[in-house]
Image 1 (tube, rainbow, N blue to C red):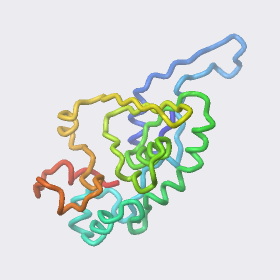
Image 2: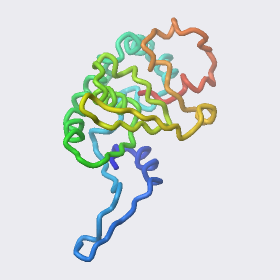
Image 3: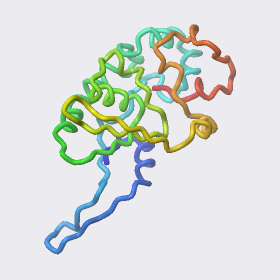
Length: 198
C-alpha cells in the first residue's frame, strides 16, 4: 500500500484493511498485508504560489497563468512550483520499481500523479498524460500482460454523490481552452471551478 506523504492520502488509506499473518518462526511480529508506505515522489504536483487555490481563484488572481496552463498543461510550470514534466521525472524511478515488483501494489494518490503513472503503464504519450480521465472515488486496476496492461475500473461512489461533496475533475483537465467549453456556467458556487487546483 503506497501513499504520498500528504495527509489526504493517509486519511483515505487508513480505512483499508490490513491483515497480519503470523508464523512460529517469525521473530519480527508477522507479515502485514497492505502495510502502508508513504513515498515523497507520490506527493501531489506542487502548485507553488497557487498552492491551495481553486481554479476559479487562479483565474481571478493570475489570469495570464491560468491561460498559459490551459494552452499547455504538460509543460506549464506554476510560479515557484512544478509542471507535469517535472513530476514525470520525479515518478520515473517509482515506475521502474513498480515494474520490478512481483506482488500487487495499491496506490492511494492524487489525480495528477495517477494520470502520469496510468499513461506510463498504458503506453500513452507524455502529451496525453495530463488529460487522462482519473475520476475521483474510483479504483483503477491495471494488470500487466505481455503487450501492456489490462484495465478494470470500479466506482466506489456515484457521480451524483461526488458533486454533492464539491469534488470533481476540474474543467482544466480537458484539452480545450476554457472559452470553448460549451455550457460552462459563470456561477460563484460552481463545484468544478471551485475544486482545489492540480
